[in-house]
Image 1 (tube, rainbow, N blue to C red):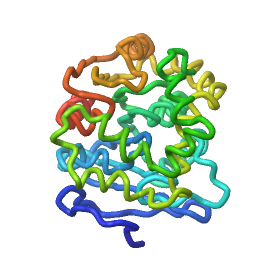
Image 2: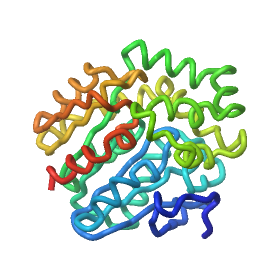
Image 3: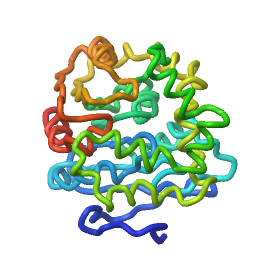
Length: 287
């Protein structure tokens, strides 16, 4: 397989791997040796989000970072609707194919529900979890509901995402607190996966599903108690305005009582971009 767009080889110096998935394929990274770490992204990001974490840890860990179908370099199969339920099933397929065991699961944004849907059903296959600015329950707070209506609504939300590539062009840069890190190369890495209006539909579906996947999210929350004995690291960027206030962090602390929490005053929504060093440290602490 060839990369569908160019990347700076210094920023993303990894070997591409491809897993056939129905009549599409999942692109993923599988770097290093040691305890297995599964790195799950959100919207509209992909494995590139974890590049600096992987470079730091691949001497000591095995790091698996997939792109969900429709994101990054993955190609969605025919009829794929890009719902979080389908994305979680795709990740479980990858876990099974690679026979991943005793994992540290790292989640942020939609990676939370997608990863926790697996975690609550396979607690015995987890060594620990790292949680960053995410959720795994129905949206109750007004900022998340309004965000879903605005970004995932019809027709304005759909127009913003499919015609303007709004999530990748505007929301990602504004979700990084350290403005000096928002380079032309970074902007290109997040916009290039979505060159056409059709290719951008997944970035509209995710915010829409904050409301539409309520039943699925309720089911995940009902099983979070299965993880009460799981070692957890919680990293929380306080500059996040996308519906992830400290109260959401406190909810994670209740569900994951064996947690160590680090509040990051200099990080926004995309913690991996603002403070990859703290993500690295959190993973090492679980080991």
